[in-house]
Image (cartoon, helix red, strand yellow):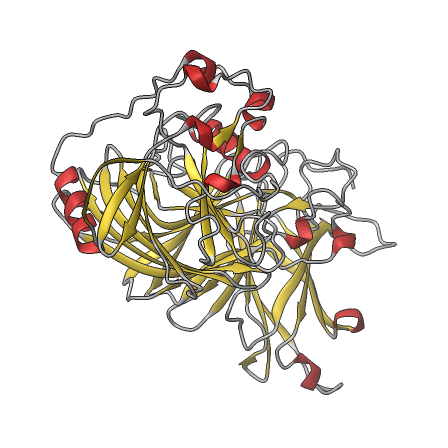
Length: 526
């Protein structure tokens, strides 16, 4: 499957997978089971993944009953899970798991297991788990071994709105205190943003470890498989206003992998105050995330605003032992979006914190062109410098934070807005084309600056001439606005890289702002 097709399918997670069902009053129904209970722990799962990688890859079957195979959008939405069939329903536990039906874009069965006292018991598909409504599917005509597409988790504080969902390949999402879905992540990305088709590893089975009655953490395990790699995953999920997931991944390559994406984040950026290539919408901004933040191993903080490019754009930011990175939604002002249905200002940010030394590599950013908000077009991930080889065991441990802001922020002032437009001096005739960049900084120690303190913008560009630079106070944000024009000095249409931070008396005051601007091939009239 090509990336764009898969990403369009993934949007169904946002609109189909998370209906707000009423909790049933009926007594809970214990799930049916398949086969015998077997010993299970994470070590055994890693052994299973390693043994799987030693065998030739077997593509999954997508043979579904005709009525399920042909479900359209509305019919698939009509299928509802019965809450009284939820795993651990009404058992005085703080978690419940409910399962997604196969159909529409999700045609590969995924096995589900419950783990209790070190024993794993497979959960059987049962048509009685679902209300098929107006879907046209007749439960009596479905095989008893049909299987599931994925699952969602509910926490005891709200049985109508889920907090985590796994659906499609290795994609999953979670929410913070705003209970608003947005950005996704995956178990793994392979060859993302390359000229050939991307490979999508998939989770083939999940194990749910039965929590203690008063536990506020849930552990879920997953087995991964793909043509290039097999893997074992452990997710320890702690719901809160800043939802935390501890992830452990053990990967076993079947063949060399050119571009491995660890902790891959997937989001959407259509347009914002910095870039408005798509300008036909009535809303001022549309995006799930507005920038990539990186806390480098050397302590430097970077902010890279996202763009919706005309062509695929790939960037790699080299690092050694990164401290964290994430796709963030910094702009949380409703007035900047004016969308009272999607509520983009509530979309969660997602921060990745390595729990081990990841060594040398790069945070890589893929930006794809998008024509509407139904396509996730942004991907960011960690790419190790050493290419994975068959026979290796690759271990990665990291922590995911889902919420309105990351758990750590720079002690320096941060970028709060990036705006661009035609350069030059108002009222004076423009003799050549230039492009203006206005970057607003707030926070840090900026409020301590005296009126006579000289603040210097430190600007570097890969091509062109920087001119008309300035830094001035901006009272509305209790910060500073830095501005400069960039004059292209050639006709090369390739992107130009820009870098800026502010300092006073040699001391950095702000995080580092990075940007990539593509000069127009046809310059507007002056």
